[in-house]
Each structure stands twice: as C-alpha cells, then as structure tokens.
Image (tube, rainbow, N blue to C red; front, side, top):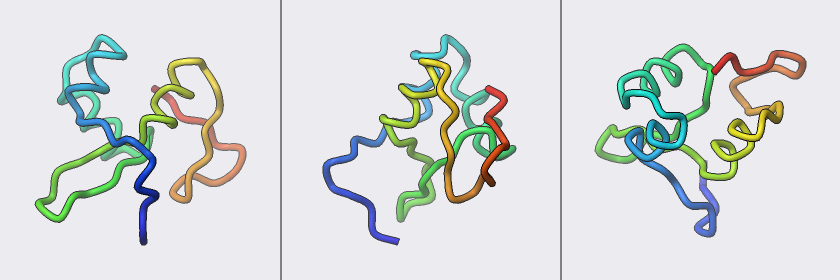
Length: 74
C-alpha cells in the first residue's frame, strides 16, 4: 500500500494530546480497531491527521479496516 506523501502522519503522543488521553490509550484504540493506524518500517504506529481531526469533530470516518455502518468508539 502506498500512502499519499501529502497526508501528515501523527504519532500516538500527538494523537493523545489532541484527545487528552495517555498515548497507551491511543495504542489500545488502534489495536481494538477503533482508529486506523499505519505501521512504519520500524513497527511504530502512525495515524492519518485527516482521520484524527475528523474523529475530533465527531464525524463518522470509514476506513478499509472498518465496514460501512460501524462507527469508531473513541
């Protein structure tokens, strides 16, 4: 899968700061499928900035990992 170079990717710490939770909570959300993540070649999780901001606005974000009609439970 090739990612768009214009899409900014956020670290778990950056996402955690936006949601005001611990970074481990963001990692658990990703493991549970509540938010999609991308793995770097080194195995670290990264999150699409556009999806994170959409979730912050309360929008239903569909990802390839989540079927239509199933909303994130963040």
